[in-house]
Amino acid sequence: MKDDLNLVPFVSVENMMRLVLSRGIEDCMAEIAEYIEEDFRRWPLFDKTPRVASHSSEGVIELMPTSDGIDYGFKYVNGHPKNMREGLQTVTAFGLLASVETGYPVLLSEMTVLTALRTAATSAVATKYLARKGASTLALIGNGAQSEFQALALRKICGIGSVRFYDVDPQATRKAMRNLENSGLNLVACASPEEAIEGADVVTTCTADKQYATILTDNMVGAGLHINAIGGDCPGKTELHRDILLRSDIYVEYPPQTRIEGDIQQLDADHPVKELWQVLTGEIAGRVDDRAITLFDGVGFAIEDFSALRWLRDALKTSERYVNLDMIADPDDPRDLFGMVQREKQRM
Ligand code: NAD
Image (cartoon, rainbow, N blue to C red; front, side, top):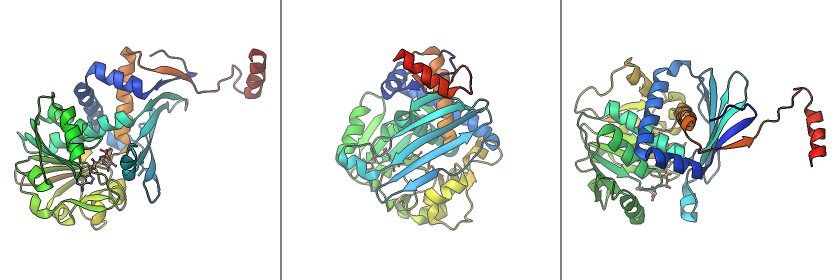
């Protein structure tokens, strides 16, 4: 990537897909997971705030900012469960990285694909630290846009070998299994969530419904299970029965955001939860024994997007998969913005 302060590298969806394909999807998620781990280990130095959400009856539009004092990043993301029925994505996103020193943007990117990669990488980080050793079977409930990424990241990073699929819409399961048929994973389609969870060591729920849904009930969750609940990520939008939460050791990203958006919105505001980053730094223990139920109540936090953008900036050092955008008005004399506009007339 060339350094020109006035031009901002932009990664389009097409360039993102080609970049990811040329490096390997699973390798990209493993690399992003390393960036996430690195940033989680320096968690206290980040500016943190719950994301700024604009809710409507159909969905939500959110801004997710953070900074480590050197770089500043934000993501724009929506969540519209009804979109899928209209042929639109439930989640779309784009994001930006900027220099704290100058305030100038240094990278703009599509983040719909990048969000799927980083969400799967985050689930894999949680699973790596919280699931039982030797976990090999994943139940994947909700087989939409995020699902294949979740399966592949858990295979690459956590050694998952078998995936048991369930979705209310069998077409979604067929799509996910078709996409993964040459992945080397052992794939099993299931007719109910109860069947999917049979024999699973890890469950990822990634369903989309704007309501208090009950994807898992208490009787389905046996000792030793690790759950990544990533689809409950908005007020009034949850996936787990409350009784599961009461039996689980709960790990979250940023409690002030998760208490508003996560499955734990069903609990009292002072119900004890642990912060995942502290497991990575060793400040607190992860799984205590093989019988514990661990729950990662993942809602997606700004630092994960910041990590993904840092990964992308580094990946572009050896790739041409971007175009430069003329986004910054930067006259030679910084005070002569008006003159710069006038001089353009001679070039028209
Ligand atoms: P999607 O609309 O593409 O897929 C959702 C799937 O869930 C669909 O196939 C749908 O049929 C299925 N589903 C709905 N209700 C179900 C039920 N009761 N049981 C089983 N399956 C059911 O959505 P997506 O992009 O894959 O996102 C999935 C969820 O993850 C959304 O709620 C989204 O907001 C959330 N998400 C979270 C994060 C995070 O960081 N935590 C990041 C991205 C997306």
